[in-house]
Amino acid sequence: MWGFMIICYICMFFSFVFLSLSGLQMIFKFFIMNASFQSFSLFATTFYMFSQTLVMFYFIGSGTAIKKELNESKESFYLYDKVKKTKMILFPHLTVNIFLVGTAFVLIGAVDIGSVSTMVHNCLFFIAFAHFIYLLKVQHDGFKDNIDLLVDIADQRNIGTVIK
Image 1 (cartoon, rainbow, N blue to C red):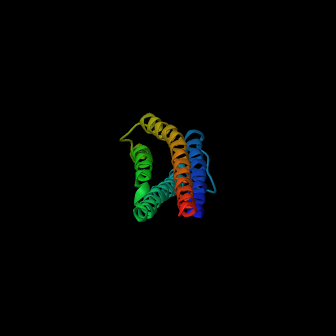
Image 2: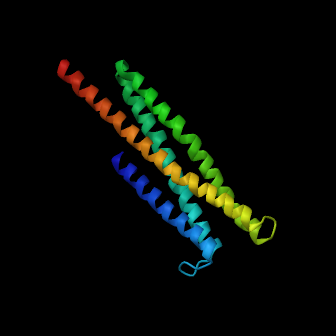
Image 3: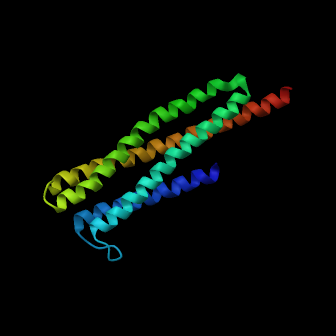
């Protein structure tokens, strides 16, 4: 589980870098490895979607594993409420941000054919990017809460084995 969490952090970092480069490319109109703004944005958005889906599945999987672990020891099932609280905080922000970034990417095509103004697209991108920066903090807090919960479960197991 630790390795998967580290992979999530690495993907979150690269998502930030790629979306930042895409935003700079949008403003300053330069190429990255001969890729135009539209081409690089496709790559950046695809990688972003992959990384955020990975984070979502980490929390789903770890929550399921924690629930299974707590089902075996009925006395500490109240700890699962912490998992649900973390998911209730994280998942709405994660879903909204995936929607915003996806919509901003789709609007690139609308801007190219003249259906939507560049200003509308740029504003949506910057709102999505600002929310993504906030989401990174929420995700980090979720990872910390998850680790704290795992430590609490391990402590209870050790105390239980010492008492028995």
